[in-house]
Length: 148
Image 1 (cartoon, rainbow, N blue to C red):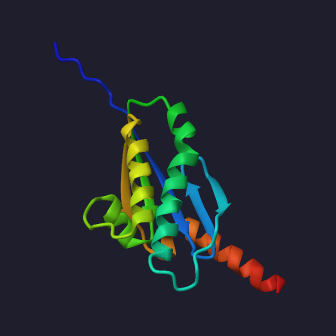
Image 2 (cartoon, one colour; image 1 turned 135 degrees about the horizontal axis):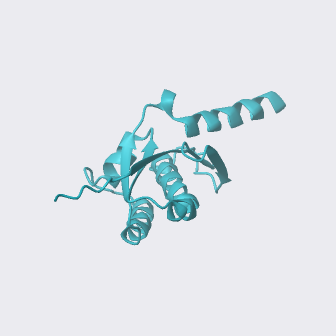
């Protein structure tokens, strides 16, 4: 007699975005929660400044959601972390080389975290118009402009 096990697959999508002005945000579509962090802004026209913020956004999206991931009792979990930075996604998927030392350090921190988890994390590119985290940053800018 063959036994079939029902494998429950749970997909969780998290959008992440970072801005050189120092705003980093993510939105977890499964829990419908978002978080905005403020970090030291990049120096204007700094080489790799935007990419550093995008990589930091993904780092914090994972760190801030780790506890929520661990609470889920599913056989198979797939967490999809999405960004509108194609170069960052390609770096995380090891398709392109990371040329900046700081981005390499953030990348290694992400990889160390992922080595300790039992679920699968997939990095995926998402267009800017569909990235909810990017829309959160746009709203911050709009609010700042209206206050001025």
